[in-house]
Image 1 (cartoon, rainbow, N blue to C red):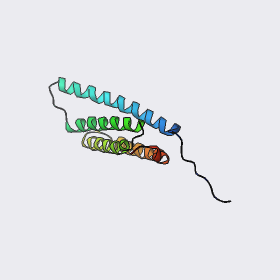
Image 2 (cartoon, rainbow, N blue to C red):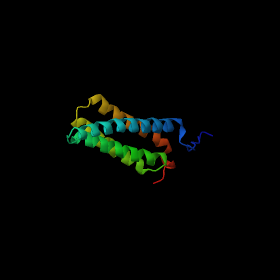
Image 3 (cartoon, rainbow, N blue to C red):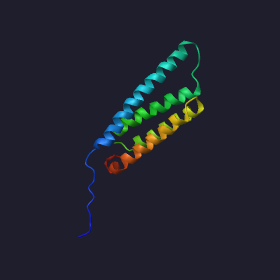
Image 4 (cartoon, rainbow, N blue to C red):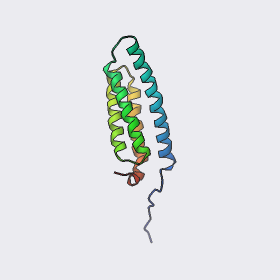
Length: 124
């Protein structure tokens, strides 16, 4: 009489798909910009600073994590959190605005919120 049935989500859904698509595009664009910056620094005969190397390493981790999340792998979320953490450390060490750092953390938390109803669909 008063029981309700909660259905298990059957697919990725619009919000999760949109988040993955936007984040994937963002990682590619920002990664390309950092790569151009890194090549420019090396061409000028300078070594790359630790903040820039950490940002590039973090974005590489995020790109691999997003590939895992697109293919329903749970390790993608862990790697994404590690990639964001490395990127945040690089941002804090460099001259990046605190608003950008906070935005990345909020973006990751929003993803976790969108992901949680579909967590059972991901493979361990």
